[in-house]
Image (cartoon, rainbow, N blue to C red; front, side):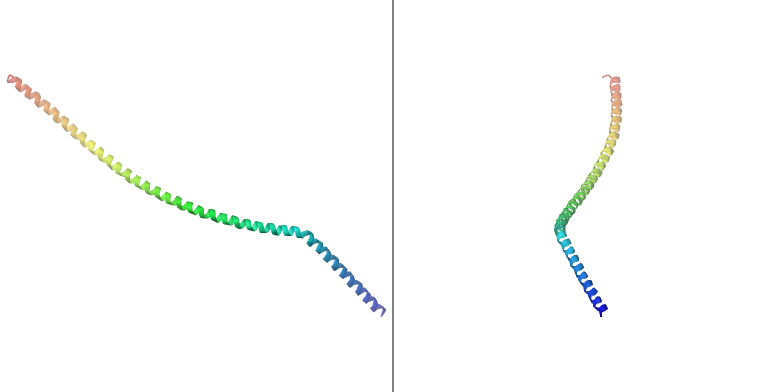
Length: 140
């Protein structure tokens, strides 16, 4: 019985020691929670603000992306118009080139005609000189 009562006593002391240890641990945890609560609260607030800022930034990025798409569309339209104008200029340049070629051909034809006319004038002078010579022979 003595041994049994000592075991009950040791068991009671162990239970009391465990209870005291649990109480001390609870107090330490409570102190830690109370000490860390402002920091955790600030961290949560900062995280909320960061999330709100991220949402705003995402909205701004979406707006910028939409604006970039619109600008790209305008640039493509402008590029298409420039390409059409370049085609028209190319067509006009081709027509001008054809006209210049025609003018060169006409100038060459005119040069040939001018040479023929010059030859005819030379023959006319020769004939006029003969007529003058004949008139001089018949006594003018």
